[in-house]
Length: 115
Image (cartoon, rainbow, N blue to C red; front, side, top):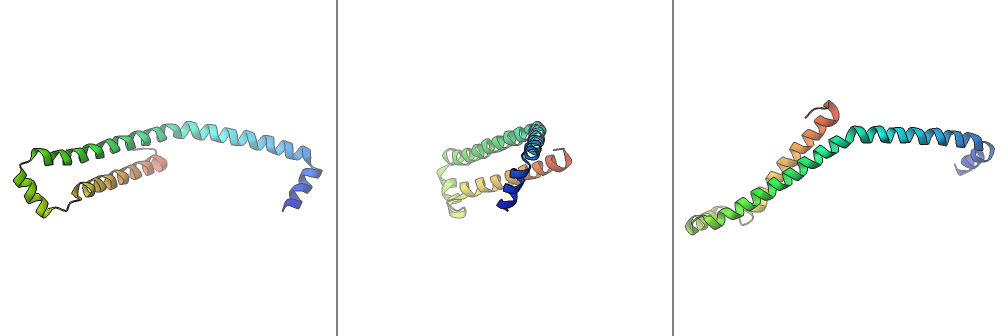
């Protein structure tokens, strides 16, 4: 394979300069077109991801904060029923639902052009 490339570069240097110039122009046009087209989509997905992360942190803080305000008897009864990692489980559930929503939204943006 390298012998073929050396042969082409050795015998046709003008052709390589011509093809590399056209290829560079084509790649430049393609990247400019794609960056303009998908920059807004990437920004929208980033905004939704940050909003969902903030929501998950809010829910985790809300669940932990409820343990402070509720009566100790209720917290004790709840600890008999619920596992010790209930906050982590609820956070994982919200994160999975958020990831699924973002995946569906991203697929909708890519293939249908709508949310």
